[in-house]
Amino acid sequence: MSSFQFFVITPAFLTVSFTLVSVQFMKMKVNYEMHQLKSREAFLLDSIEKYEYKLQSEVKALSELDVREKEVNNDVKIWSNAVKDCAAKLKMKPNNAGQIL
Image (cartoon, rainbow, N blue to C red; front, side, top):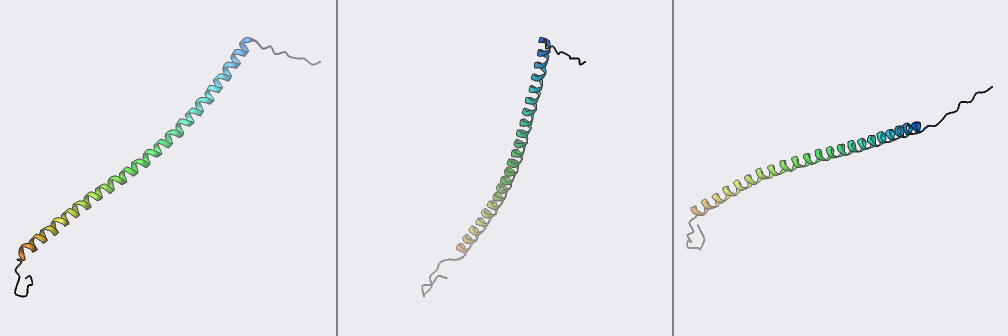
């Protein structure tokens, strides 16, 4: 003879089952959101590193420009002084042929 077991679904069983399913769903949702946050965090950290590198490159370029500007200003002063010295040394006196000595 075969014996059949009857499974009785009670309200308490339904409540516990629903609660377990809800907990599993919330767990999956939290895991998904954590994954999304970790992905976003990795993207933001990568972006920050790229911008830091770019800013460091720009600061380096600006400092090189500043050094070059100082060199050019120094060259301008040297040439300006050389021109002034030459002008002071050359006394413009026309000679008989109309040339400047």
